[in-house]
Image (cartoon, rainbow, N blue to C red; front, side, top):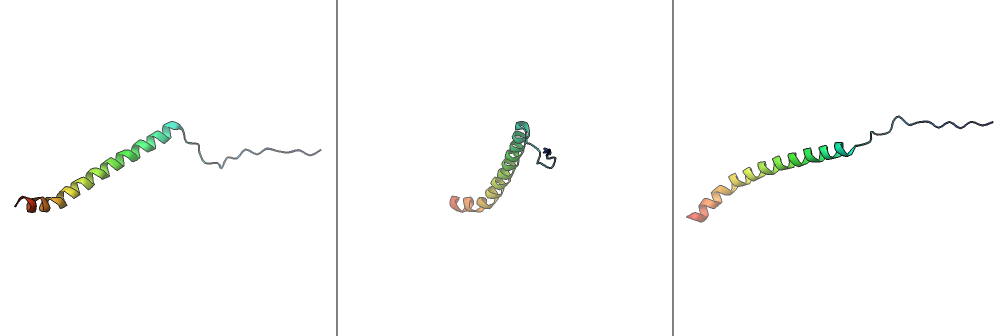
Length: 56
């Protein structure tokens, strides 16, 4: 008689729930928005001297 055992793998990666995925996506979007605002501020600072040249 030969017995086969079925081992349960406990080293699998944890499953991501939909809530977890959406939370990570939202956090990423908030970081992107923050970075875009910072880039816009930097662009405004750099562009200011050129805007003054066009007025004169």
